[in-house]
Length: 126
Image 1 (tube, rainbow, N blue to C red):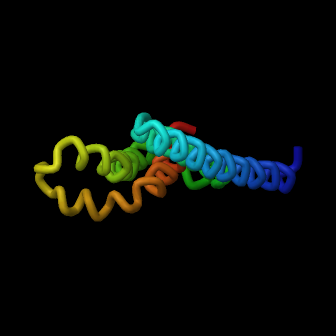
Image 2: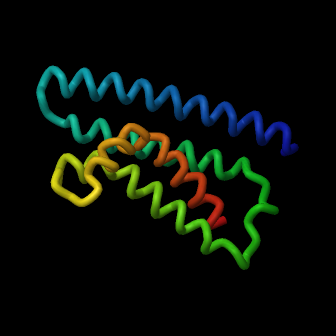
């Protein structure tokens, strides 16, 4: 398969992930609104969709950026973005954590941070 076709296929897979995420969000939100249950599940499911999108984006990056000697450096952004990604959950469970205001602010970017976690993990473990 040519590189152009691989890029087009991965782009369509990314759009498919986005469509599945949007559909999953509306279905679970509608179910959670009617029953009052599984609101937490909606967030976890979307985090998994964004993580899959990040892994897919990581496959689009040229392998010359990941040399065998410096792969461990990708663990730093992975850990930082995981902390940002779970910040809404941590803030809901333990609101009196140190730096809780920072977690509340960065919680707005939790879905995007899971996208970055997937991208950097794909680069680190390629």
